[in-house]
Length: 320
Ligand code: PMV
Picture 1 (cartoon, protein in one colour):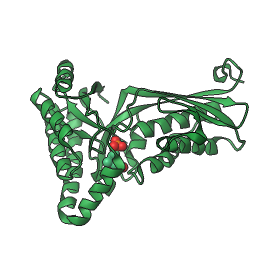
Picture 2: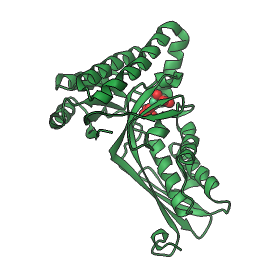
Picture 3: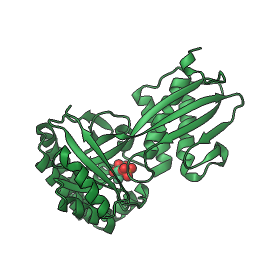
Picture 4: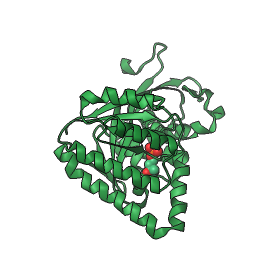
């Protein structure tokens, strides 16, 4: 047996990691088949450690809950689904597991926490069973969990938390986005949980009521993504910022922003951000601001906290 996969008690162990993500452009519209762009947030990551148990029980240890999986609260059901999905792909023999999650990714903030946990679980169980899962298998596990967490989703989160580089996502297809100059972003937490499923449902209802207006907005959000690709390649910060600003206005028209997000977006622009917008499902969650350059990001963070952000983070997307 590989000693690296053995705990001090001689039980088999496995480790899996994943990171958060932020949607830069195209959220909500992507549900209707237009493209979106997401960036990895390497600063916010998680580690899943799984250890085989002598019995066939499933035991969880996380910030939200510690105990038998059978007693887990509903918000952990996606995680339990991911464990079963990963076990089904890796072993036909029933095994018990201790599953420990050590996560720096805040929940329900549009940062892909549920998808990242599922990806970490898939990788950890693959590691323990010595049947590493390929990216498609990891994605299948994530989608099984995401369907429970968010209802039908575009699949963007699942791809974004498993990619080390920015991606363009459309209808399940993923391509890397070339970036011509480092881009530094500041994320600001509104302090309010967002419900992606609820926000997606609200957009669906708005579209049923005002189909041509909403389809026009969706089309433009997709157009912004396509326009942004050349700007990424050129490392054109002011142009990317302007596209982010326009995307935020359109998301406001889709009624997925709220007063706190709008206030933080305005504060970011007032503090010199090249552009700012809500990121992810909205109605709570986070704001993403593009710093004019890396040196100004710390000031931007301070000003966003002064404007009421409960937490802020910086991330730089390197040239690729
Ligand atoms: O709130 P998040 O980060 O999980 O992002 C949701 C993105 C949406 O486009 C609103 C929904 C989806 O399934 O793509």
